Image (cartoon, rainbow, N blue to C red; front, top):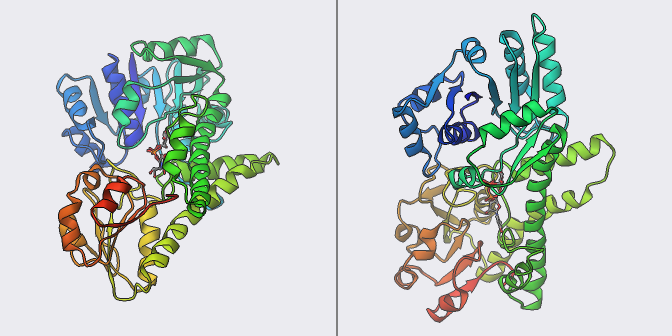
Length: 425
Ligand code: UDX
């Protein structure tokens, strides 16, 4: 099949390459020239393990091409995926202006039946809205259908998630559209769930919000465990082995960041508000998440005393490992609190390089922790697990560690002579 992917960001490019792997001919369309020239030369405009090799492979065998010519691209392809950004508006709802402008271009240039599919995370009812936008910009009436096929890619493991999904959601209004989408995914072995476009849109928000809820639940339980002297990791393990609960997304820490969870939870709250439906459980999850960095900082303060003019080492800036994304990253909140307390903050991240005011970024873990009064782990990069903590201890002024991701072996750290503090343990 010939597939057009509009928007070559992280979701669009990963989806495009998945369809190449499934044996389809794919065109990636973007108006951003610098992004296009990078992609054409086999380079990714974002960091995502494994994707660049796949890009090179499909550029070489000609299964993927890139263009900025909207008119030709719309005319030549039968299935068009909308993968443009849906940033958060001031009121928390998703801003659909990019989706609208793509829909209008499709309406203008449509020349025969097309299946238009939204991949971006969009509010319930967007498929209907896109249909209206296309109809309004058509010059003559040509049949088309709008379907919803949400993505569930995690940054850092997008390739794995795309090639081995738990399920694929096909939200369509006709058998014809379902068959087309099934053909696209024909080589996957996971369940293909057939549903309506609106239900597909809701599944995406409901799934992400549920995962966010799970994290906030374990974090709030962690606060109680701190008071009771119980290890939250043991509680998570004991709970998670119940297959009805499951052990993933039950890791207590300094909260969730990234471009999806905070934005999608807010968007679902907005949708509920619009329909005067109560989803206050999500307000609570958000509130727990927003206060979790402060909760952890209080713990740091309580156990280090006055931080004024003291060097502290913050390990990890990205919102999670294997990505350079710092959107909504919890570490920046912690760094802010530390700076306000007068601390001299030194940071380290294996790939993120950002300049933060009154903060020193070091290239190595050793430099970062040297003479530090405390180490604070904000991202669970494997490098921090593998670090030689015995050696590092001798470089630090005080062997104190605050593990914001509960990633280190507490007993081992203590036996090395560290004062170890986790979240909820
Ligand atoms: C998420 C969804 O997982 C994915 O399906 C969707 O398509 C996009 O949003 P992503 O934001 O890339 O993916 O990261 P994810 O791995 O889900 O982690 C999100 C945040 O939750 C990170 O900050 C992570 O550190 C945190 N987290 C995750 C926890 O604090 N505890 C956990 O147990 C799991």
